[in-house]
Image 1 (tube, rainbow, N blue to C red):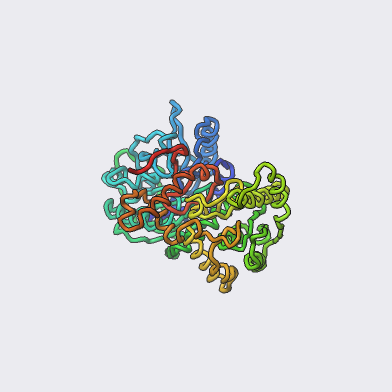
Image 2: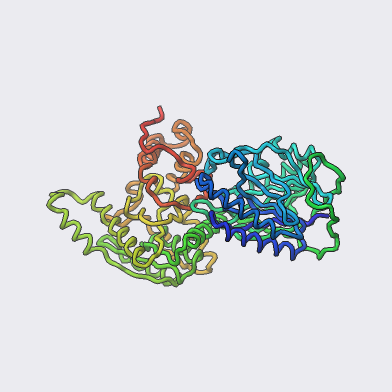
Length: 557
């Protein structure tokens, strides 16, 4: 019987000392629970993804030295730890060190390097070639890294043919909607194919645009989940696995000859229920916001509170992420701000218990118009004047950010960012875009979910019922310029996330409307390229996995 532990930790990219401390703390916790072997996520030593830090040779060498120093402290337990390896030719590998008795006993190098979506591993790493398995007191197991286990008939099949009874996969798999289910279904299939137990440990935490959701699990050879870790939290998943003892498997690295004690305190079966889609999205947004703020050493956040649904939701997420004492709401009414939205901004701030300031912008707006009058001449009120108000608000928020050292959270959603219904240097000004990958229809669902969780209307019902508006001109509504959001979001989802063509989409939708939306998406790439980073929750977000040229004349024929 082997007791395995999966330590889903929340490291920070580049914090070698801090990440090592996290690993040591989890090892001590695992030893306290009489774990025989504990596994940590992919690149746990340096954090994931380290991106072009990997092009700095001194960074790689420091990472290896950190692992070597950590290994000397690991005794009385075996550990699998992700790190960056480098060979004598200075080729880099995404690797896993298997450690016991204070020594690095062996290193497995990742074979399958993903190069799609947010992944760019072939830019940095060489594919591993070694085929090694390990033995701990007669229990034989294999180690793989993330993508290795996703490939049909790959290294997992090879290790199974060599007689391993346990496959340990260390991973840093980012969250998106439905990803956990896809992981589980795939690994259940892989367990049945290999007739082996699978221990899958995943990273947790926010790193720039990415959120890692944890959700580590252990699956038996019949494809049943026998232990399942919490999502969006650090956790140690532990289970006893009845592995057969094997005297010899070729090319096996021996970790320990000793017999593992069978006299252990019983453990409670650890199986958590997975979150609903809407709960998963909300938890991802909270974790991504919290880690971006904390890991970048900000204390407080600033939000332009308009009294609308987007800023209300962002404020609620911010409170859950960093606490009400560290959230500041700023209302900046103009001549077009109605009394209801002005009141709702105050109500939301009161219900959330955050600091709140109101800074009317009418005087500044009038001064700008007066200063520009001679140059502009006589002309009707238009987009220039609308955007000027948004840019005044952006300037005020950034001024307060400079004065207080606070991070400005922008409040634009994916529907607006997708079609460019936003103002450069205005409402797009800020340091982090919390709901950048959240469609408008999802914003409403998340806000309703928030109120339901609070058992009271923290976000007033009037915010849900009022037609969406930027309030930059008299009686303005979003639908003056855009299709209804339920229609727009469906088109955006198919075009952006599904790569569907105009020809495909017009089979079920109005051709001219689809063409209009596609043109708006394509035309506004220059805006999105200048937007702050934001949390990815869909399979294709405007960020790492959206790399279209700004100068682009392609139009589907």
